[in-house]
Amino acid sequence: MLVLKNLLRRKVRTLLSILGISIGVAAIIAFNAIGQGFKRSLDRYMKDTGAELVVVNRMMQDPAFSRVKKEEQDFVRALPEVEHLSLGTFTFASPRGLKVKSKGAMPALLIFGRTPGDRILDKFKKTVKGRVIEREGEIMVGSIAAENFGIRVDDTLELFDQPFKVVGIHESSVPFEKVGAIVSNSVVQKQVNMGESCAMAWVYVKPGADWSKVKEAVETRFTQLHAMRTEEFTNFYNQLEYIDWFVWVISLVSVAVGALGVLNTMLMSVSERTREIGTLRAVGWRQAMVLHLILSEGVTISVVGGLAGLGAGTAGAEALIRLAPSGFLTTHYTPQLYAIAMLVAVGLGFVGALYPAVRASRLSPIEALKYE
Amino acid sequence: MTDAMVKAVELVKEYEAGSIKALDGVSLEVPRGAFYCIIGPSGSGKSTLLHMIGALDRPTSGEVFLNGRSLSAEPNLDAVRAKEVGFIFQLHNLLPQLTSVENVEIPMMALGTGRIARRKRAEELLEQVGLSHRKSSIATKLSGGERQRVSIARALANQPALILADEPTGDVDSKTGEEIMKALLAARERNGATLVVVTHNPKIGHGADRVLEMRDGKIGDLGRGTDFRKREPA
Image (cartoon, rainbow over all chains, first blue to last red; front, side, top):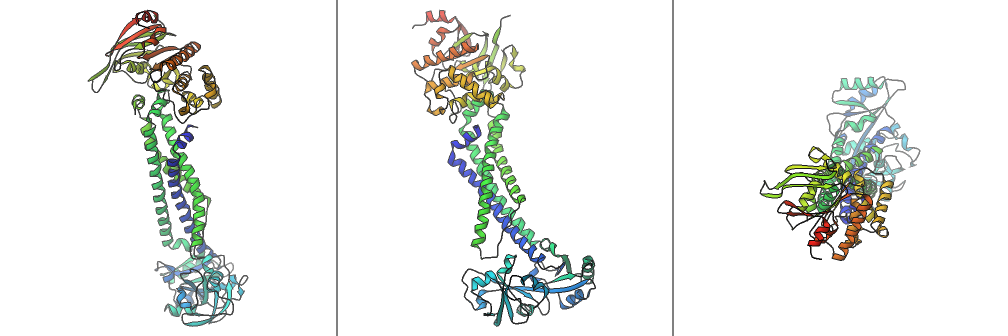
């Protein structure tokens, strides 16, 4: 009763403190949800291939620069446990290079290189309008990219100064595949001067075969290569970890600023209520009770701010991905993310209220009663 | 041995490294159930004496016995105040954001009294001081006299054995002051508490069992209230 009434006494100040905490929590939710959304998209991208392993060049920090040479591809393909090897390349194309006018704001077109007719394209067969690429000179366009550029099946699209026949408009559960296009590996290899190398090679192991033998064979023969389970892909590239750290640092700075707001609010509140605190002590309230009262007020601000931040962060993340070029961003929310965000809010609110609470509890009743 | 509710022995209270002596060897005994009035000019040490016997502060030297217990032996004066003492301040010191009934509940929170019992007791006390109709009024909406009556009700919340009133009528007009004293004395009769009132106003002493005078940190006995009344002009 007393906690709520004290907070409602200065409604604007309390609201501003709640806002400070909620902005910080919203930042945690929004940035992390988008970051995790991107990682989940990558995980799904890998899982949807249906392959057990993916081979990359471990020397390269970024998969875009990974190169698996032809002789390395041939070695993997020849292993007794390997049923099939799918090669993958990718690059970005500027919309200027497409010779089409973009309807929306698409900064680039993601170009995925695949072997025409390869089994890795099977996942598109159920939902593609038209068909998958089966030969050189053909292109499949993601549904969002097609919508944005006004591309239809049987159109001719000029890319990298070459004409391509649009044979299919594909859907995908992976958002960034919908903003991309799929052409033959040779197109990308030529465009980025990578010869017959590929960026990564997906390994389909024979039923009942031991994938760890493939891994061991590849990594023993070629120490620069890394053969990993497809579900390990996002953990392998630690720039994604850096993204995580960056996101958390930004978010925590935001919440810390909110906690400073709580500190300021509680200090002002304690100062204004010095005589009242003296009265509480005079009528028998113990120091611990005064401490508990002030801390409760701070934590209440944090809890309310935290809950508001959960909602605002979720809404903000959804708004952000709609504002961003379609399909590049997606979100993923977990109960753990919400729980951690709330814990951080309440914890920092507690810390922010602690100093004012201790100060209030240590006021001498006599001095407090005399305070003007 | 007298049945003293309060016994002070040679109390000394110094401030600023002894340069200010608010109490200079004050001794007194207040019998259980009595009404004592302490008068004196500003700065004479009246309020300081009240703070000592009310366990709000500790003396520089000397002893205070409250209800037979030495306060110097008490590690936690908060608990003593919560159970034994009810304070009424000149400026009432109500919490402005609370209603009358909520203000009266405040001391009961110190003893962990349950919500329902607190509310019941608070409403009873407001009825005793004639403010049932104002129980839901925010403290800032009350008149000076009403606030002081709420303050009286608050002081009685934990059924203290000792009520200390520091200039209870100091902030109101004389008519309201009389109403306040009437309410205070009635409440004290009903609850059987010992009452010590510190005041500038000698008229308040007329009804007291004893009137004491503080001057320059020392205490003197002016006799019974009735005798005091005869000496004081009307």
